[in-house]
Image 1 (cartoon, rainbow, N blue to C red):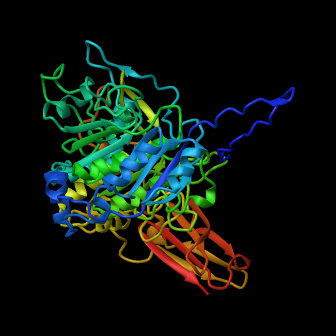
Image 2: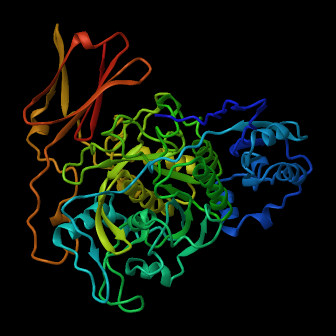
Length: 575
């Protein structure tokens, strides 16, 4: 339930003929929008890093625009003099966040250069996104000996990248090299010593760090959620040597082990306050300046601060900041959230922004949507999530390795995929890459609000068209009372493998060899959309017979479209 800050006024308590004085109202958080940036000097060459300038040049973006210019020093000085605390100065929004009393806020409104002063609600609550631990899988700790990774966990580690085309990327020599990826998270405890990041540290692949809550460079304290997320991008399993200096690194847990990283702490582990949205904005401006190509944010803000109808990509500060980051040439990848099995259900923000790649979670055993993965659409009925990846992974923890659950880990797997795609074709703009990542989904052009366009396919980017059926795999058979979907005989008898099996993976893990899993069932996806393209219903069915689906005509309203996807073929029926 959304909480608003309400100033509670105490009634005066009379003590004889003299009333007791009321206590002063406590400081609250305010957003101060400034009027202009007239006369501010700005040199993009001295402000932006070489990597940032190169990113803009590649994408034919201006060297700088009005949002890059600093706020007017005279306006800022007046605001500082009028309040006790300034918590953020934003170039992008030409605004200042402050803590002030109501009397100070009233004085701010009268200052020259102040366009608007708005009070922002704040309330300590539980964290919006937390890693879900898979039960019955204990942590594999490291110490003086190489940690033991069991066969099942090793297999999961291989499959989480294999499902996204790890072998194809490797054959093409693509591993994220030359890309800068910024991570916004709770903290990165243990990254500075964990063996999984030995190769990353040895090549100085962490190029910048900053804690935007404590205003210091050290991000290796606090929470460890960022450690787990980074593991799904650049972590490695134990290799042939011991310690940081010996032996070759082990197999990668993510697809971008060679990328460079910017680590930003923007979130407290057990609280969700407005200061963290401010920290996200500050980190985005920093990442822009430092030349980030991709921002990964495995955080979501939901019912603790917003109503469902506000998840439209324009209401929250982080959604607006993420959209502006995208316009500046950065691909923003966000976890959809872990509320699919709660009353909230929906995606959080900033995944709701239309230029943000929102990532849902898939079950590694079935390839289907995980119940806890938040669903779309956005409040204004856009497709969300955009794509999906494994939401159950093996990743790094401060004590070793552990099985984890959450869209927090699907997002960095896709961010690593995006890094490989962009490395392959650096001419793409961020907007073009966003569109192609959606088109790379194995369901595309079909979509639903649970999996989006599905699991991205590497072959889409590697000059090798994805395998498509030679012809239709099913037929629509209308009758007076219903529309049936009947699978064609040739498609019905072909076994379907929706995800790579162990036999297809190189370098089977420690322990005895495992037999391949049986084939997954062939799944038929269908949805029913209204004349605006908004889905009214969607479903996935395992195909066990040729007559898979019968839709009563009474469910079909004028202008409706029945869309079906089976084995790479999509068709639409409408009346």
